[in-house]
Amino acid sequence: MGGETKEQVLQKLADVVVQFDEDEVEGLCQLALDSGIDPNEAILDGLSKGMQVVGELYDSQEYGIPEVLLCADTLNRGVDKLKPHIKSKATEGAKDCRIVIGTVEGDIHSIGKNIVKLMLGVDGFDVVDLGEDVPPEKVLEEIDKGAKVVALSTMMTTTLASMKKIIDEVRGKHPHTKFIVGGASVTEETARKFGADGYGENATRAVEAARKVKTLLAE
Ligand code: B12
Image (cartoon, rainbow, N blue to C red; front, top):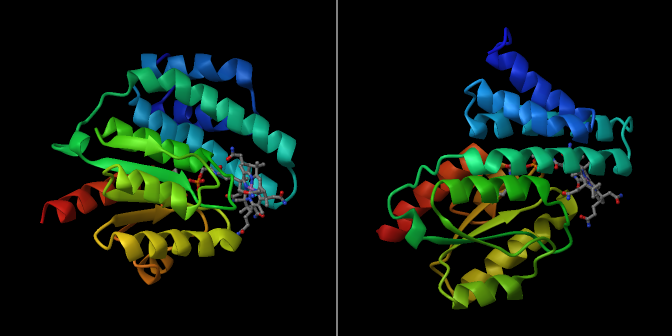
C-alpha cells in the first residue's frame, strides 16, 4: 500500500472531499483501488465520511453553500471513478424487485439519496430514481407500473410531513406497498410512526432494510 495503511487512505479520501480538491480526488480513488480497498468502503468510509465533516462545517457556518456544492462535486467525481469497480453482490431475486427512490417534495438534497441508490443497484435491485422534490403523484405513477417498494429520503425536518404524505397517499390506494425511509432528519422512531417497513441511517443499513422488505413481499 505504498507505506500507507487502509485507514490513512480512507482518511485522505474524506479530506479531499472536505478540501473540495476536485483535481486530486480521482487520483486518490485510484490509489484506494490499487491498495486493494473495496470501492464500497472507499465511498462509505472515505468520501461520505468527508461529506459528514462538511455538514458540520456548514452547521458551524465555516462553509457556505458554494463550498458545500464544491465538496458535493468532489464526492460525485470520486463516486463516478469508483462506481465501475464495485462488484455487484446481487442478492437473490433482487433484480425482480423494483424499488422507486426519491427525495420528498420540498427537499432538493440528493447526495445521500444517490449513494443509497448506487448501493441498492450494486445489490442487484432494479432501482428507479425519481430525483428530488418528488410529490406523491410521481410515486403513484411508478406503483401503477408495478413497483412494490418505495425508498424515501429527506434531510430537513420541514419536509418530514411530505414523507408522511407520500406514505399515506400511496397506502390509501395500494395498501401493500412497502416503504423504507432515511435521511438526516429521519429517526427509527419517526419511521415507525410513519408506518414505514424499514429504516436505515446510512447506505449499508438501507440495503439491509431493502433485503428485509423484499422477504416481506415474498410472504
Ligand atoms: C449538502 C447540503 C446542501 C446542499 C445540497 C446539495 C445536493 N445536491 O444534495 C445545498 C447547498 C444545495 C443545500 C441546500 C439547502 N439546505 Co442543506 N445541507 C447540506 C448538508 C451540509 C450535507 C447533507 C449531505 O449531503 N450529507 C452527506 C450524505 C452522504 O449524508 P446523508 O444525506 O445524511 O445520507 C445518508 C443517510 O442519511 C442515509 N440516507 C439518506 N437518504 C436515505 C434514504 C433511505 C431510504 C435510507 C434507508 C437511507 C438514506 O444514507 C445516506 C448515505 O449514507 C446538510 C448538513 C448536515 N449536517 O447534514 C445541510 C442541511 C440538510 N441543509 C439544511 C437546509 C436548511 C438547507 C436549505 C433550506 C438552506 C437554505 N437556507 O437555502 C437548502 C434546502 C433547499 C431545499 N428546498 O431542499 C439543513 C436542514 C435543517 C433541518 N433539520 O431541517 C441542514 C441539516 C443544515 C443545517 N444544520 O441547517 N444543502
